[in-house]
Image (cartoon, rainbow, N blue to C red; front, side, top):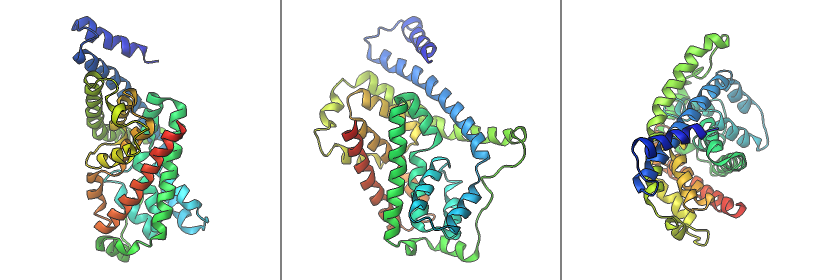
Length: 324
């Protein structure tokens, strides 16, 4: 399917530039050209198709259903699945968070959504399938959804509502919430301009991270010797998974931006579970995300939230390594 991209990369690197395949820079540049074109094409297609699907997705109805029905624990799973199809960004996380809490949805259920949304979304699924295949993608999605479900359930047992920020409590007292921000009406032809505008907005925000991630992956692919990561991050080192998750926190990227790095880590011999723990840490536990959440959570709540999610990411990493 992507052979034409490989041939193009071969022509540029080995034909036009006349670089030897044994050259470090040649391998790095070939990786960058090939993965940039492939991932950006996948990204554009997936974002556009999911934009169409999301334009019909009844966000308000889901929120109303979760608040009005007692589901005996299934609400955590439903919120986690909801996170898969809903974007997590500065324009959507805060109004959705407030809307969920104001609608009577328990805080733990809302946090289940917040855990899953950045880890497993339509863009990450599409790119993951293109890079690792269907079997790995299914395991990744199931793990991410279970991670959100378990984290939300655990956090609910801690009774953390008192740690919401005064700003949120004041908005809830006044009944002020942004509604209808995710709904579109009309025929598909009438929705397409708004859908395309969202696609362009998402791509502008994502593409820089994707290119940086591919560039980092290219440098690692071209210059890091085989066996380097395998030596320190092998399954035999019990501390590899916790180390990968903790080292990821200071970094920041979205799932599509970090996937090229994960691809190279796996190719260099890092166990997939360790690499996935690193990716989940980068995406779900980054410091910029913590700063965003400070609008709705106190520092204590963020610390508890990060602690529970970190523990579950580490468990998921060990599980991946055990299964694979």
